[in-house]
Image: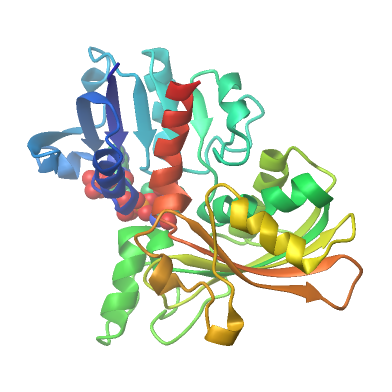
Length: 329
Ligand SMILES: NC(=O)c1ccc[n+]([C@@H]2O[C@H](COP(=O)([O-])OP(=O)(O)OC[C@H]3O[C@@H](n4cnc5c(N)ncnc54)[C@H](OP(=O)(O)O)[C@@H]3O)[C@@H](O)[C@H]2O)c1
């Protein structure tokens, strides 16, 4: 069986990756429809050797098409307006923005972690925040075996996470250009600030990690705090994750757990300087885990270093894996 697939935001960083990954994974595409803003209407894009024309996103261009999956990556306001429209015309929307993630009616899914949640959808499924996806992929085996009491997230996030304009700020910044996307230069700098600030002093990105982790792991009792930082790295997010487990553990069991965990690649051999790095993770599908060590400052404490390609596993790949998960179920 083949499916009619629409890509909304097809010209963006994530949208282009949708095209690449659908082709790479031989996703069973029947008709393909490409949507972006009026600025891109008429542009040609290639998929599996054929040319497709980008259409302006508007209801008139949607209503006569029979779309099975609509993969969205055009920002929150577009998702809020258009996801219900696509769903009304019979599509299952898988959305990359933060617009629907905390809606109790909308499943928030990482296929290695909570695949069964896709069944509860009512037309819209949300793809979690890029930093959350790689974190929960690494935390799920620990949560299942030992239970998680508390998490401290510190992130080192690449500029590609801020879209094409964030990427340009780093590349052009090294040539002396002033930033257009970020409030300060990112070249040779880092910004302890991702998304806007909230009244509690946290950024929205930090609270996304807190709230989305609890929703995906189905456990509101986990205590979580986060600091999210933009760093001058082109692609792939890195995270230091400090976890307090409910039960005691042996380090060798943790290594064993990660050797066999779905979607995880264990890279931890410090004697040979083996640990995950963003340059190595870029272009790959796995969530890389390393620097595994006991946190001596508390009982049952563990430190992890987790790296993944934020445009692939953090966005486009996870979205397509959700669609595959629906097909397989
Ligand atoms: N980058 C990441 O790591 C990442 C990770 C997870 C989730 N996301 C989410 O994915 C979404 C897109 O991110 P991105 O990094 O791909 O951004 P981007 O590179 O800036 O691309 C934005 C896309 O949205 C389209 N768009 C903008 N205004 C539109 C409109 N009025 N109607 C239709 N399409 C419109 C753009 O089309 P034009 O080219 O025509 O302007 C472009 O295709 C965001 O919600 C972001 O939060 C990004």
